[in-house]
Length: 386
Image (cartoon, rainbow, N blue to C red; front, top):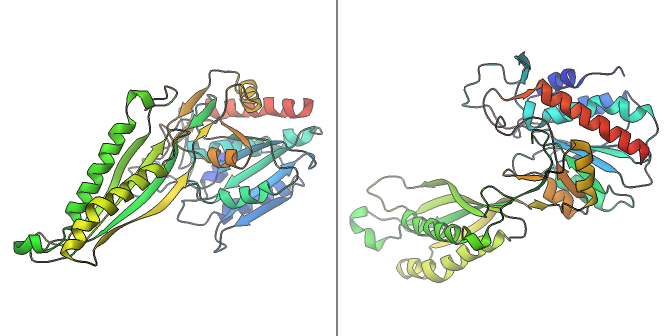
């Protein structure tokens, strides 16, 4: 296999429209074939439908832990966004490489793949593992099957570097997330007789108000962690649906809310408090009017936060690779908390900025991409020297 630059590899990766609702198998097949060209075997972990897959590969010895380089292959949709360039055809202008996923996070994956020949040029004392996942953008779903398999191995990796876009600044932490759906089942009637019905929207409003109260309590200065922005756990209602006509008391209302939780805070406690409020305060009033009314909560997705200690081996390696021990945090989530739960100490550092992620005309600068190449070059030297 001939060597390819990170720029050229990014161009190939962007061309695969791996929006989370679509398959990523063509991209995974490209990476598998690329690695096979260097004599590297890949292990695939498919979803239940066989339409998506994680890829895991090891370079170097297999009888010891090693360092994981991790990235997600899925990207967010471009629907409804005003792009001025083709989102799935990479374009270059003024030192920037444009395309969906350029920053989040195919730029890092391209740089990792470009470094493969350097990793193979001399024997590694410590292995490097490549872990590329699916469905990160919809709740960090895909990586879990791969991590479950790694946890069972005698020589599972010891450290993980997730290349989410941090402008190559070293990051040790982020918040966790819990997303929930609340369904309010009321009782319809003509609005002229509103007291004889159970207004699902009005009860949903009371529940949302309760979430606001909980969120205000979590914002108390005593609960702040200055490493994060905002420095407290947050609660937010983002979607609501209900009602059919103004002259009908609505029988149904549903809303989705999320908790962005500081590491160490149990986001489920918010859902439990809301459920208790619904069960003890609201449902008795609803069912006094009509017995078959009620409120239900169900989870949509969840992932844990990350808080890697600044004095850990993982942090020391990140300082070496990034050239800085000015560790920070990010507001967005990553798969890092899941790696950490699997016993693989995790840090975050990658090219580009999330200021461009999820937006039209997403880009990563050539300067950032080349900086990532240099960072991985330092990793090559570290793994050779042990």
